[in-house]
Image: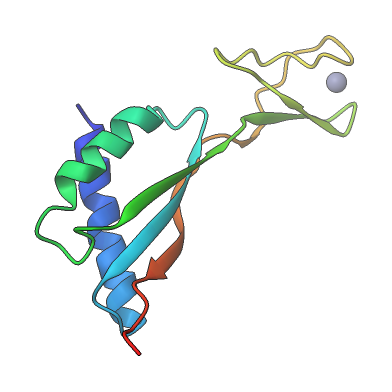
Length: 118
Ligand SMILES: [Zn+2]
């Protein structure tokens, strides 16, 4: 289950980002996951709950933002959703396009620190 190694990497990276921000407890981590990144969001959430144990993210929430996969058609100068499973065929001019513009994202976009006690 490769989600566990991804979740472990997210926990490590988020922990480092939090330290750079001067905090050692994280309330929530937001990740962008592309449709074609090969990650199942539910499996990632489950793996995250295993990976966060004993880290500054022990009580952190994982927020998964899914990114729709889009390819670009040069003749139409337009992006189109490739769908799932992906179909690299422009719906406007009926020609193939392999120019993927989004959908492979796998990145941390936000970290919410635990609010400091007053
Ligand atoms: Zn087209």
